Length: 357
Image 1 (cartoon, rainbow, N blue to C red):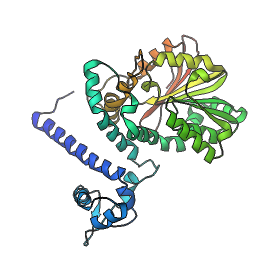
Image 2 (image 1 turned 45 degrees about the vertical axis):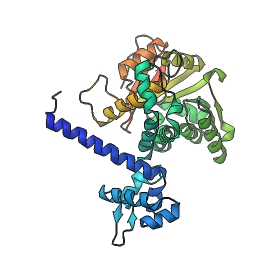
Image 3 (image 1 turned 90 degrees about the vertical axis):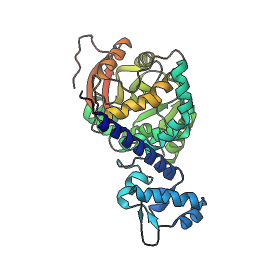
Image 4 (image 1 turned 30 degrees about the vertical axis):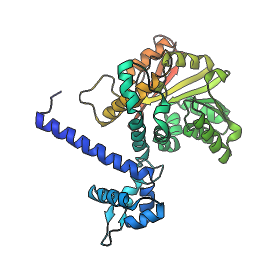
């Protein structure tokens, strides 16, 4: 790479400081419901304070900053509102343009920073509980649009044999690391003859999945478990979405998955879309994945006993090595069109089988 000169690099760092401070102000607006309210009507600081039972002076300062940043618009009466063009990103929604899931985790990282600094000194992990509700909610929403609009289409396009088998014959799908269950619900809706098991160590996520499954009339075909140990073979399909890089012992986990599969079953790993080798400088997505690894994924995975995690940068050669050590082979690798994910198909395949892209 060609290094920036001292002035250009200093400017880049200043711009990062500005962006970080503006993002923290946006975080305040999200947590207090200010954008949701201002997307519906224009209000003064006094009116907003009365409606939401918040402090007027703080709101006056926040509104002025938001107008200065070009996020809100103010009229002649000092009423502020969120333009429609900005509401897609900042008001509550599950569209592809929503950025709430990317902003909320900032609060989780901020809460965990003291423990993260300590971890660099003592080598311990930082458990997910340290990142709190902000990280949990952000992580749950990050893939929601993908789950709702692209997940089963990706299976249809990339794994047509498994897709048709699940559609025609049914079978057992395991959503490993299901979180709050967005993928589990998508599978149950798309494959009405299949049974889906959501597996996760987090109790709150499993309860959310059970609640949503009941509300959607899917409770009879979805169950939840805390561990793979509770499952019995045969399983048709095991899916890990943004899960493998989050666990402490990925080889051991894939090996356990392999033992649950039926004769024609497979494992699908959907994980970070990163280059095969480190890039300097990397593109925006590569940089995003790298920072996520530093701030959450690696320290959270190291909180597990005897852990040897990959971090978010699960590059293709590393994925191939992990699969091999688990007694599996990657029989298909394909980038997905959401810019953030790559799909791998893993099977108990012959040693000399080549990967196809």
